[in-house]
Length: 245
Image (cartoon, rainbow, N blue to C red; front, side, top):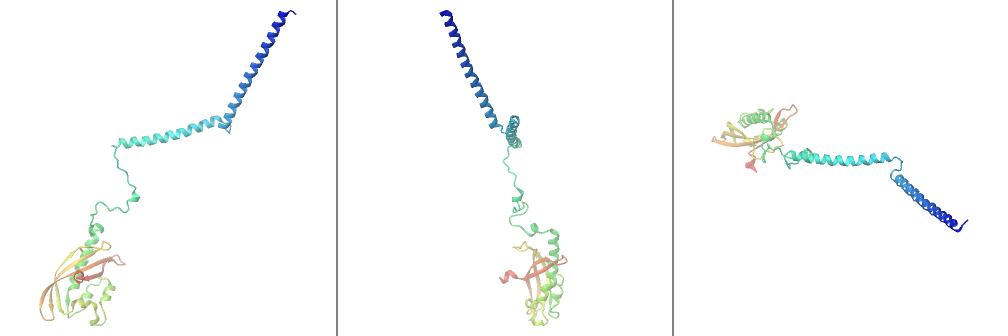
């Protein structure tokens, strides 16, 4: 083999070796890249279901997007309603709110029905007419006449078996007779608003033990409640209460 032929063969062997070496590097690099890709997928999809994870991710983003759309929709509705800044009140927080139709200084008309007010006014008028009349010849007649109008327990409190002990006679001491001339039923200046109450203003003609005649003005302060049969009765009264304070 000539010297030139040997040189050619040597160059070919060296070229082949370099080619094989380069090929080995390329194959190794590709395998390493594939392994890294597999490892990354195993971290992102521990159950090996890549499509499932992609769906979950899309679903989460979709929910977030939906929430944003709902908020934007609500805002757009608020703008369409005229940009009013009126905030709807929670009805649970309104239970202490005074109704608009009731004035700052409520009266009995605001708190009780007209039917109950009219009925109690009738009772107050009848009570004043009967109870204020007095004749010394029948000293307990005024007590007996208001049975059914005045609570029976209160009548029992006013009466006693001995005439000189009758509490109901203390307001007619020194009077021979008393005749009612007029009765006016008025709402008290400061009604309790817990129960219906009326003031009965009575003008009467009085004859005293000396035979003198005079006109008196008396005011009964009356409070009403319903009895067991659901009928209104006077449960308590005061005569000229404001004058005695």
